[in-house]
Length: 382
Ligand SMILES: NC(=O)c1ccc[n+]([C@@H]2O[C@H](COP(=O)([O-])OP(=O)(O)OC[C@H]3O[C@@H](n4cnc5c(N)ncnc54)[C@H](O)[C@@H]3O)[C@@H](O)[C@H]2O)c1
Ligand SMILES: O=P(O)(O)OC[C@@H](O)[C@@H](O)[C@H](O)[C@H](O)CO
Image 1 (spheres, rainbow, N blue to C red):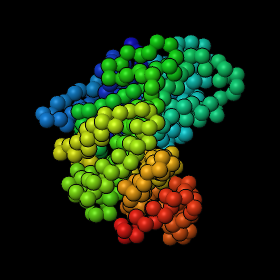
Image 2: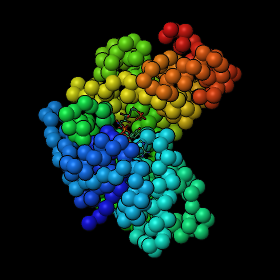
Image 3: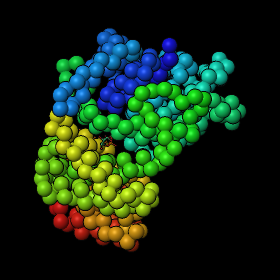
Image 4: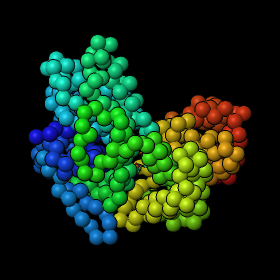
């Protein structure tokens, strides 16, 4: 039987990637750092995914097992035997799992395994698998890299399915939206492309990934931060506020100026993509909290991420991204105590001021036009 190892038995792991792998006939081994989840997987050996559509559908996921990430020997052995490895741990965790992946690859070398293996990072980060490869290779010698490279691929991927955390009686069951998209870079696979219904190997991956992150995740983040400031609990509530709705749509359109120009999407098709995404955000069956969608604002405010990158690109095209600037300003004001990164930003603003914070976190110098726009938006949101 084909074997898959999936790092991160969280919402996307259980509700999307692990589900598709299991349905494709893989035995799925989840690796996670939370013992309750791993114990429950090993205990129950199955769980349910609920599709939150017009009529709720339930899918049983079976043929699964779990390994606690601290059990290094078992993780290495699972990697050694795997036909495919996937991750959904969060971009900032990829460097933490890289040593374990390297140890497993070393074990494959010792056992002289020559079967192709593809390692796919399913994270909201452009070039996540390439980044993981870079991190993993830090732990290998040049000779090991040379021996591994011909058979081990790290194809980049894009993943799209809204999966908010829920409090269910069964800690493994998970509710997901009906829509999903998992696209992987066709030319970066080693060996035959694995047949996984629901996973699509595409030629133009960059266009898919950037369109998704700089439209869906951009709009989502703006809705989360503005909603938080106005005291709304969920994205669904936030979008009922017409002012927020207009700013979210405006931000997605500003980002679209860059996307349509960069990838040649037609303006009409892109507008349809925006409409469809806004419709997905409003799914009444999903209770998606603003603090989940706004989580880790240091990452989300980074120069390459969903807010600053499209704003800088729009400015370079001569546009005036006022809605993205409002989103950035609101992210700087996200003072949710339950989020460590939000606390760091608040502390930074208090101690070094807004100009230095914008420079250090977003890479925006005081002379950059976005600096003024964000500061203007800040005055308005306070
Ligand atoms: N939830 C969504 O709607 C969604 C959709 C598309 C993409 N994503 C992306 O998928 C990734 C995962 O998101 P999520 O919502 O599933 O998050 P999550 O917090 O639900 O899941 C992450 C899991 O990784 C585990 N983990 C953390 N550190 C670990 C380590 N060192 N070793 C092993 N496991 C570890 C956590 O315990 C958790 O179970 C992120 O990159 C996110 O951006 C999420
Ligand atoms: O996962 P993050 O923190 O990068 O972003 C939060 C949400 O925007 C995200 O999880 C979306 O729900 C998801 O990207 C939909 O495909």
